[in-house]
Amino acid sequence: MPSAARRPARTIPDSLVRRAHQRGVHETDWLVARFSFSFGDYHDPNHTHWGSLRALNEDWVAPGRGFAWHGHRDIEAITLPIQGRIHHTDNLGNDYVFGPGELMRMSAGSGIAHAEMNASATEPERHLQIWLYPRRRGTPPECELVRIDEKSKRDRWRAIASPDGREGSLSLQQEALIFSTCLSLGASLACPLAPHRLGYLHVVSGELDVDGALRLGPGDALRFTHETPPLITAAAPDTEALLFDL
Image (tube, rainbow, N blue to C red; front, side):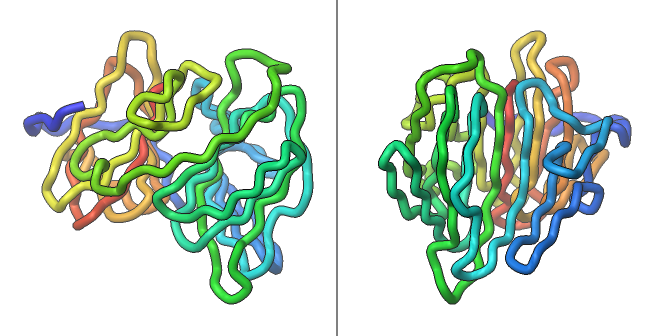
């Protein structure tokens, strides 16, 4: 997806913008979580899902703590580390320790049990947990771990998850694509979609100017359709963002 020239400012409805402070909140003695969509005991009828995107959680996990052994069915779960390292184990025999620059897909299918813990006993860990509805239910469960070269995300949309595993991305069991970028200050990217597709833009760090009409910061997000694809411009150095093509 190439960069694009600036376009005239337009009005973006507030209903399409999800501010970081508007997300659901869940806090315990070891976990601070923010939910972009309804999740667990948090329910927001205006934010239950967007296309096949079911959950986008930002989790801060205390040293030596985490999500102990539990099960899932029929969900595509992607774990994207931001800070620290995660220790994943499951009943398929997988045992991964991974951190920033790596990401994991867990296709729960007919059923899987796993644990995801902070691998450090002294340092906190932060990650994004992304859930997608699968294209089919009851498939055999599986996990996949890939590494993404950070340089490959510089000032371009780099596929990190796709149905066909393009660019060495995770191979999703869903007709969805997830792209990541790290933008230099002032760099711009278009966010084109094919007809009848939905888009979701999420800022991981830094700041984005959207069509000269909106400023998005860390944790902020924008929903859009193929008819209103935004043009984004980094308003801070090394701004990181995710684009979901759903």
